[in-house]
Length: 273
Ligand SMILES: NC(=O)C1=CN([C@@H]2O[C@H](COP(=O)(O)OP(=O)(O)OC[C@H]3O[C@@H](n4cnc5c(N)ncnc54)[C@H](OP(=O)(O)O)[C@@H]3O)[C@@H](O)[C@H]2O)C=CC1
Ligand SMILES: O=C(O)[C@@H]1CCC=N1
Image 1 (tube, rainbow, N blue to C red):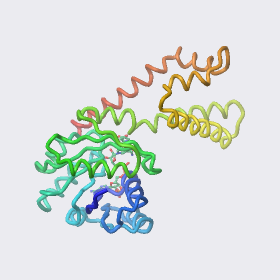
Image 2: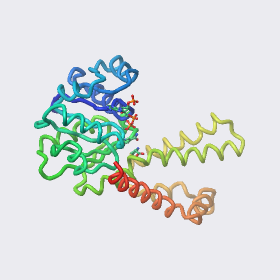
Image 3: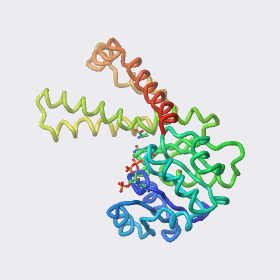
């Protein structure tokens, strides 16, 4: 990928994931800076990845050709206002990873600066298994789009969307969804414990089943998910009874309603912050 100076504003979980991917793929550490109010995360980033760090967002801005906005949505307005006040932003590419904040709102927060690309990654990025959706307004230059895509591709797969509202659907399907899977596994672990396993063994049983199932999905792209399910479901057997129970209790509707709730919250956040 092209090399540009990147500053991360906010050095939390997502920033750490992306930086670890960048450095692991050979991006020069001296071209990366992270800014954060508390020192602990910065010290860890410096010692683990030899990147530059600062507690001063303005210094990070001065350093950067690309600014990754990685603070919580509710802090974004104050952080952007301070950046825009500090120095002219012209010539810098901004990449936001924040949920719920549309490009138009980010442009407003950055006092009219237009060169902004929205992305929506997820926490498996920390293992290089992330999924990131990206959106750019038509006026964004191809080189900037290429850079933002390459940046997020360091930590997993990417998918561009051509309608900004679809970023909220990326949140529902990929940004938030690791938590759905964890919830499902928590419930399975709990029931396995009820049925007699200790906590550790119950976790091993469900996590290994999940890992194997996830790999089967990824290694068989030609097979529909329903076909993989059918392979497990012997006629008149145990799986059929469990699946029937899920279906009778409306699993599909439960999932659809939860994903719609995630989209709705993202839409609300656009007005709240
Ligand atoms: N977690 C997830 O699964 C995903 C999160 N996102 C988005 O990523 C963004 C970051 O989330 P995540 O990494 O999980 O959150 P974290 O809370 O881990 O990181 C946010 C960081 O911002 C720092 N911060 C607070 N105030 C400032 C400031 N004024 N200037 C600079 N940094 C500041 C915090 O520092 P301190 O701790 O010292 O206060 C913290 O380290 C959010 O906008 C979220 O919507 C997107 C996709 C997935
Ligand atoms: O829960 C959230 O708002 C963020 C965005 C996607 C995952 N975590």
